[in-house]
Amino acid sequence: MKLYKVDAIVLRSVNMREADQILTLFSLERGKIRVVAHGVCKPTSKKRGAVQPFSYTRFLLRQGRELDSVSQCEGLELFWELRQQLKNLIYAIYLTEMVDALTMSGEAQKEIFWLLLNTLRLMAGSDTELLTRYFEVKLVNYLGYQPFLEECVVCRGPLNNGRVGFYPAAGGVLCAACARKEPHSFWCYRGTVALLKLFLRWPPAKLRQIKVNPELRKEMRLIMQKHLEYHLEHQPKSARFLELMYKI
Ligand SMILES: [Zn+2]
Image 1 (cartoon, rainbow, N blue to C red):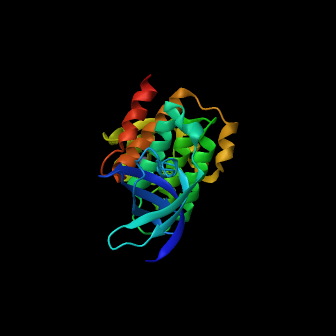
Image 2: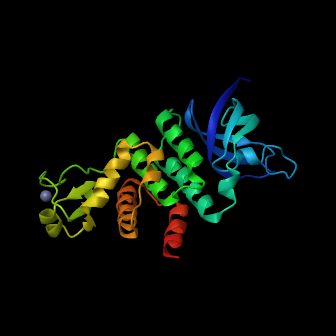
Image 3: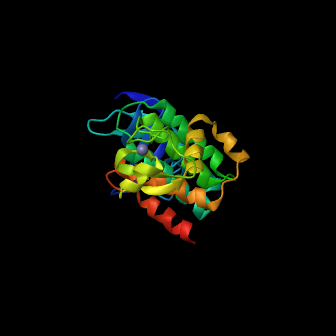
């Protein structure tokens, strides 16, 4: 039986019978893959930490007839600090659920791998909400369906100052004149759109330098939520937890 090595972030783990788990991994070398990990639910298993969602782990995998299986694994970064606080835990799960929902199996996507890993690395002690918006914008950009933010998506005219529209079905912004005519668009500030455009160009460390008021945060959240909903068949479970958290 052939063995091979991958470095991967665990996207999901589902319990099976007899202490086994099916893991969905996002690997640097092969993109998203599903593997079986035998015996990891046993209290004595040394692999437990390394196979939890959002752990960054080095796997030695054995090729199987249907699913490949975990022969050995070594946790490289387990992100304990994110697991100790409910808010960070939910955000980290959300990132992995988004990658799982939006990527295809068996296709290496190195930019997305590094985006996910670096976002997890920055998460503890940073502005998690802004960092998550940054992650969403970059993720859809790498996948090729970033929101269109340059000019009005309907009339192709320039964006006015002040309030503009966002139209999820067209995947972009509207000038005020077009927004008034489109009942399925919603209003947002031009500044919110400008901020999302900056995120596309910035390295994540730059987020520490800015302060964003609650209104713009709410609008960014709504734009990305509506834009992502358009591309997702169903919303990740963690997205609903995040919504509840914003209301507290
Ligand atoms: Zn227009």
